[in-house]
Structures are given as C-alpha cells and as structure tokens.
Image (tube, rainbow, N blue to C red; front, side):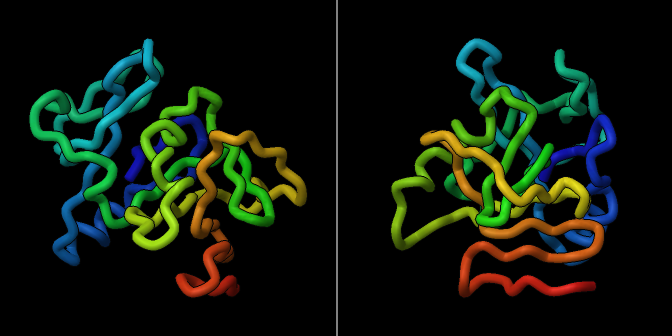
Length: 156
C-alpha cells in the first residue's frame, strides 16, 4: 500500500479497513535512489518524509519483505489506460520491483491494483517494454478490471 501525497487518492480509509480485517499492511521504502529500487516494510505510526517528500516508516530499514511475497499491492497512478497501462511519477520504482511479473504466465503474485480518480483514466496511453500492467484500477466511482477472471468493471 502506498501512502498518498500530492493530491493522490487518500489510502488512509483502505489502510484502516485492512487493519480491522487483520491484514498486515506494508508500504514501500526507497532502498536506493541510484538503482531506483525499493522494498516493502510494515506500516508503523512513526513516519518520516524521504527525499521525494513521500512518507515512510521511520524504522523502515529493519524488517522488510520481497515484493514476491505480497498478495495485493495498491499502487499510485498519474494516469491509466483502457488496458491496464499505468503512468506513474516517472522514476520506475514499481516497474523495477515487479518486473518479474511481465514474464510470469501462471503464478502472478502479487495482484497489482491502481488507485486513482476517475478523471485520471485516459483513452490512449503509450507503453514501454518495461511497463508492468495493472490487474485493475479502483477509482472514486468505478472498478476497472483488466484481468478477465479477477474483477469485473462496475459502477459504485
């Protein structure tokens, strides 16, 4: 789960719901700016801003989990296309962390789901070979499904 900044759709209600249902919540922590890599750590109450102004757990350098062991990852979006294409902030952290999903054909864990406002949906979005597509996008008014058997697109 990401922690919303700069007008992104607020994930605080989702975090609260997940915790009430006994889910363990992990958030990304920038591991290296040079290699543009990140890992995931348990969400804690003590947060600090990283060099991009994104909040991270202050104790985020301890326990960490590989992206391969996550079940569901909610990712931030600048824009998304009709087939699950995602435009992020441009640094490529998510595409690098989940690059292995582009070659997987059976076990596709974790499920990548974008969180955005409906106005961020664009009809045509260019992709690059390194882009990792989303299974679905949850907006403030709809669920857009791009993986046939996982979710169905429907209104509120």
